[in-house]
Image (cartoon, rainbow over all chains, first blue to last red; front, side, top):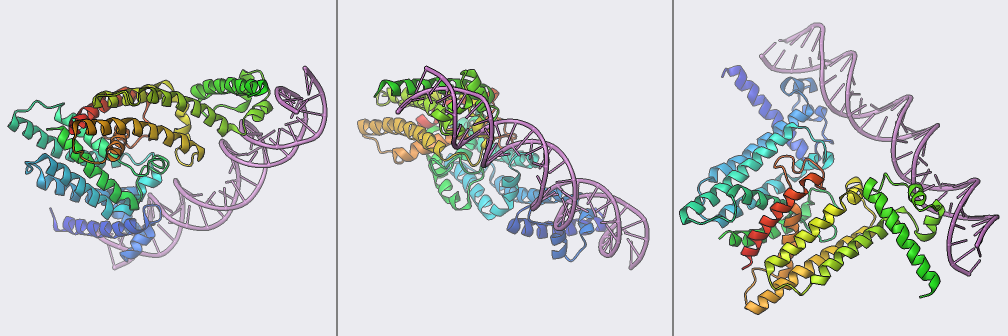
Length: 205
Length: 205
DNA sequence: TATTTGATAGTTTTGTTTAAAAAGTCAGGA
DNA sequence: TCCTGACTTTTTAAACAAAACTATCAAATA
């Protein structure tokens, strides 16, 4: 890689960082390319030199966040002996990820349907990492203890992750409100997820 | 009750039945009051004599469906000894309810947010019945076997129902599409829910 | 008096236009 | 290769009109 390319990448990082701050505070639709350019004391046109369009810029920020999250998961992959600990780690890490970047995901709430297709690559990448992490733990535990599993590890983990996502708050108001939970509900949801882990882990023994 | 009132109620039933057919086939927004009146060979104005407005008429149909569903649950309430059987019954009954009336719920998909407030009474009534049914089984089982439960039965059931609702299909496309699952996915979802029951029931022993 | 209707009033939805704002492009300069 | 000012195109939002539908009511019927 040439020095010029390194410089480019560095600048891209700068842009991504500035964009991240804007997106985090004001959300996607309330952030303009002019504002981002202003924060960096550069022209809007230069942003388009480094990124093809606004949604690609957003995606770049998103990918960076996702990579940080993935690294956290992969660092621990294969190092779990206890099923409960693996589940707890996944749920806690996910919780922190959402809490720390809550406003950034305004984008999802706003568009809800018909989001840019490229986003699903990243989303499914995350889901794959989560599935792999947990399925591996189940798999090795099955082999070690010579257990007959209740179902293929992959299916179990899929159901588990779906179940996690299903946890909401407020019996009646549940589906009334948006898909995306309110910030103030995140902790209660987290608590309920811990209970789900309790039951689930016990059920897999 | 006077004969006149009985006649009125009978007519209301007729209207509800005709409306149900329209709503089931075409959904709420594609059904006009004129069409319902036409089916019954009466004037539109007469519909407004029996029901205050269109959404109240829809709600009346909805309440009828809900009552049928509730009766199914209440007929069995207190008659379960086995936890698994209770869970299976709930999931299967719910599945049939949705499958049989799928198009009727177009209303929910269309409006998604901001539905008429009166609807949540019925929805929460159903949820209460489901919670009661299952929590009772857990409660009596705990008492009989003198077990120390993992958490209060009510909390367990809430998490279970949330988890059930979280079950979706298609790893990536999951949240991409609408809240309401596609008709062709209902069977796969149902199968996954059965697996969730397996794990859950085992986890509660 | 209870039930029914045609005519009509009121509201929501749909489509169109227009202006402002933001996204996105490009020729040319350093 | 990196960068900008000026420009064009696209998106958004407001205002308006026509159409479709909901909802009302005075009068007719039984």
